[in-house]
Amino acid sequence: MKEFLKYTLATIVGILLLGLIIGIFSLLALSGLASMSSVSEPIKSNSVMVIDLDGALDERAVDNPFAELMGGGSESLGLNDLLTSIKSAKENDDIKGIYLKVGQFGGGTPAMLQELRDALVDFKKDGKFIISYADNYGQGAYYLCSTADSLLINPEGMVELAGMSLSTMYYKNLMQKIGVKAQVFKVGTYKSAVEPYILDDMSEPNREQLTVLSDEIWDEMLDDMSKSRKIAKEKLDALVDSGMMLKDAKYYVKNKIVDKLVFADEISSVIKNMMKGDKNKDGEYNETKFANVATSANNAPKSMSGDIVAVYYATGEIVQDESPTSFGSEEMIVGSEVVKDLKKLADDDEVKAVVLRVNSPGGSAFASEQIWHQVMNIKSKKPIVVSMGGYAASGGYYISCAADWIVAEPTTLTGSIGIFGMFPDASELMNDKLGLNVATVKTNEYADFGGYYRPFNENESALLQGYINRGYELFTKRCADGRGMSQDSIKVIGEGRVWTGVHAKKLGLVDQLGNLEDAIAVAKKKAKIEECTVKDYPVQKTFFEQLMDKTSESSIAEAQLKQNLGEFYDVYRAAKDLQSKDRIQAALPYKLKFNL
Image 1 (cartoon, helix red, strand yellow):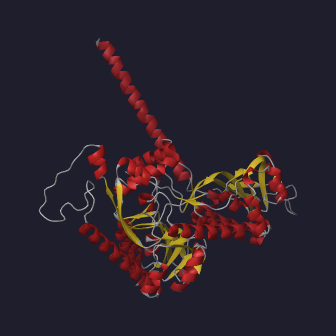
Image 2 (cartoon, rainbow, N blue to C red):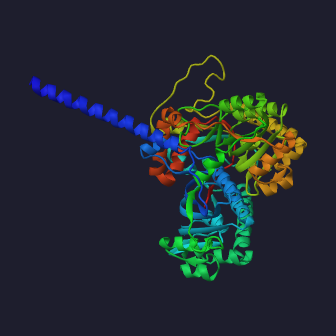
Image 3 (cartoon, rainbow, N blue to C red):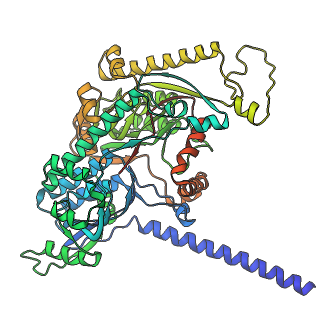
């Protein structure tokens, strides 16, 4: 028996040691890969830069190595890296063209796609070429790839051009079934974030603004694609209405939607033909990944002046503090952290100007006010310019309005100047469905204010609406002061209404239509500097910082949940939102789904 126990224990110890050794080697291997990713390979002559359009498009690449190690991660394409690589490739004589290789491309917003597309158009201005290939083109991928000199597709492929649609899910009937009601307080006719919880269909004001938004965004996309493909805008729109996605691939060639039908193994010969020239008669070429070009550009010598233009990325929903109930797999603007970061930039004498890159649908009204205060602090010491990405709405506009200058993409969604509060009433669920009753003893009238086990009474509702009204007054005053407009004028274009960048410029909510590069140019001009180093903030976490991050576990769980639930993830998310968010919100009036 003793021998049995001895050998059994020895086996267990051996297995544990082996597991520990394998774990250490795995970490070392991953660490090696992480360090290698920061070293660029030399770019050879006659190179083609390959951009794999495979994964979700984010402002900055979101890497979670621990999640990927456990099978819970997903590919993330950083818009910043893509833009850097395209600009660098344009200036590099060894790079002759770009190959857009389309995979499972998704995510991103119309404005992010528009900024990336503009960079591709600019790349071609000096005679360089772009080629693209896909087995199937989604609408967002096709919008980008329509810039290509040679747009190729598999002979059995599909072009999923169908037009623009915006959709949102409604939860009122589901909530009724389980006995939960949403108690809503808001200012703004178009402030429709609360609609999914109190209606089972769109209100007319919401339908009106969604119709205008979808029409304006589609018009921008249609205009861009028609110019690149040299197809009349009206004809292209008619082709889309013909049910293009279900047509034979030969139909695409006939109508100039694509240039040629080829199989994947024929791409190399097409690129060789594009590469042929006096100094390269056989068309031989080398490939380099866009990440390698971006790394090379980022490792280039910095300006000797020591002057810095800081680009601060404010991406995601605005919250005051990151908490265990936060969604670990999604980016957030954590107010308490952003305030500290912006104060450091304000106090840093080497930072001559700040570009605040905002891509946010809004969120906590309280956190938005704290960030606004730090924007004003920077403004008192140095220029601050806002570059709007996909969204800069509600709280996203709140934190932008005080800037010296605001630059937006034509398809940026902005405005949504309004505030709402939403509180769950679960009394029916508890009393009628679960048979639970709550008895309360209190010393003062409002000691049990906000309890989810009962609805608000008339006095409480009046107090809450007054609180929301004051928040709206403050929000509109911030906007009026920042934009040099009267508060009444802001209220006329406020009401929670969302506008595209094109419309917002006409209304005076933004100063200029353009991209991040345009915003940086404005910042340099206002700071009266020519040579400088453009530096991104906040500094992204290292491999080991991400690995040891306390949110890694929740990131993995959230990613797996999103993958497993599919479309029903939104229902789960809505329930968590109702439970965990700040009750007073300056947020986009709906969760939009773009068919991109």
